[in-house]
Amino acid sequence: GNSVTQMEGPVTLSEEAFLTINCTYTATGYPSLFWYVQYPGEGLQLLLKATKADDKGSNKGFEATYRKETTSFHLEKGSVQVSDSAVYFCALRYSSGGYNKLIFGAGTRLAVHP
Amino acid sequence: GAVVSQHPSWVICKSGTSVKIECRSLDFQATTMFWYRQFPKQSLMLMATSNEGSKATYEQGVEKDKFLINHASLTLSTLTVTSAHPEDSSFYICSARYGANYGYTFGSGTRLTVV
Image 1 (tube, each protein chain N blue to C red):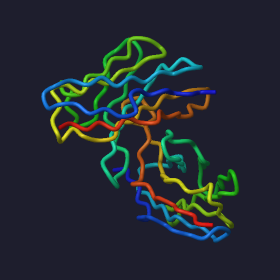
Image 2 (cartoon, each protein chain N blue to C red):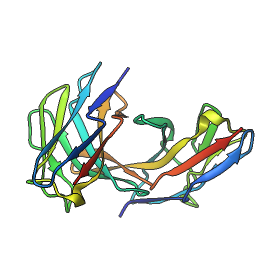
Image 3 (cartoon, rainbow over the protein chains, first blue to last red):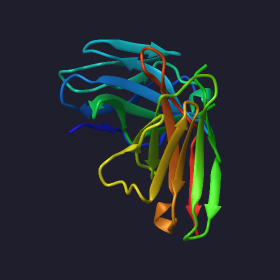
């Protein structure tokens, strides 16, 4: 079956620190992979995505590379800001019953302190 | 663009009553909407997929009679939790598919507490 596993939080960092949030997946076939971010009181927003092996998604200084050999899609940012404090969800898209559906990891809460 | 508005953001109800949650697409037509449930510190679990004008497709283990989904128009889908019990307390999130590349946009969620 399909599943997504991401590191448990919370992750607490100082401003300008390096961020890594690990995400691994199991899937049949070659799914598309996503990172979503949820700021307090808001809905999930797409942060970045990759649709095939070795693709790198990037947005707002965040990056993630689709690694088929390790079935991973780790999220990284070189220098975090307080405004990056949020919950981050790794997800994969799969097809079922004629629909494309998303399956999510448990989410990782990031807290960045000045 | 592609904004989904979900209401209410939180609700408290008594056991045995029913609660309706609305999900509206504000600036696009949402042919397909998804309903998720999230338990504390756990991932979003897909409950059902709804298409405008047809019956919803429920995921395995989700009770159709407990969680009624109606998608009567291209801008509105509703989830009604019937005869709610404390174990139904959870965070419910709707999502809609949009655009040629089938992106997904999410509502801000509804926290349901059944007392």
